[in-house]
Amino acid sequence: MLVVGLTGGIGSGKTTVANLFAERGVPVIDADIVAREITTPDKPAFAKIVKHFGDDVVMPGGTLNRSRLRSIIFADKRERLWLENLLHPLIRDEMRKQLSALSVPYCIAVIPLLLEVEFYSFINRILVIDAPESAQVDRVLSRDRSSRSEIEAILKSQASRHDRRAKAHDVIVNDGVIADLAPQIEKLHAMYTQLGREKN
Ligand code: ATP
Image 1: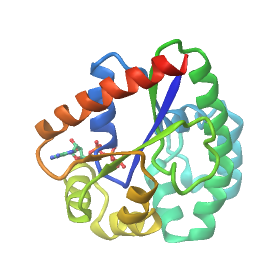
Image 2: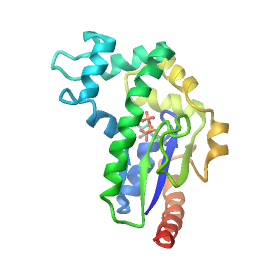
Image 3: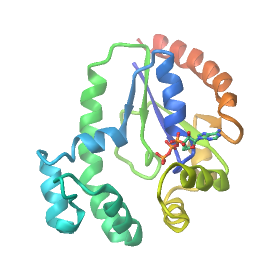
C-alpha cells in the first residue's frame, strides 16, 4: 500500500482536503484524532501530561483541557517540545497499527507536523496543502475562538511555506474557493491509485 502523508500549516485546509479524499472512498488516518484517542483519561499519556502541567489542564469533567494546553505550549517552546516528544512516538505507533489493518491501493495519513518531526518513516509520499498565510489566519479566526496572536505564534512555530513546498512530492494549492480543490484531488486520486497498484 502507498501511504501518502498529507500536511500543511494551521488552517491551510488539511481536514477539508482529507474529507474530499474520504468522499472518494480513500481511508484517512488523522494524527490529531489519534492524539485525542491516546490522551483520554484511561491512557498512560494522560497521567503523564497532568503530572507535568498540573491539574490546570484538566476540565471539570475530567478530560484534558486542550485549549489551555495549547496556550501553554505555544507560549513556551520547551513545554511544546516536551509534549511533542511524549506524543509523537505514541501517535506514530498507533497510526502504524491502524495502517496495518488496511488493504487498499493507497491511504492518506494526515500529519500536521510531518515535516517538522522525523518520526514518520512509514510515509511514502508527501502531499502539502499550500495556502497564503493571511488566508490561514482568517480561516482559523472565523472557525474557532483562538486569538490572532495565538494563531500567529503557531504559524511561526511551524515550517515555512517555502520549506514545505521544497519537501513536497505533490502540492494542492488552496488559495481560492473550496470548489477549486476537487479537480486537483481528482488528478492526485488517479495517480495515487495507480502508484499504489504498482507497489503491490
Ligand atoms: P488545522 O491546522 O487548524 O487543523 P486544517 O489545515 O485542517 O486546520 P481546515 O480545518 O480544513 O484546515 O480549514 C480551516 C477552515 O477554513 C475551515 O473552517 C474550512 O472550512 C475553511 N476553509 C478551508 N479551505 C477554504 C477555502 N478554500 N475557502 C474558504 N474556507 C476554507
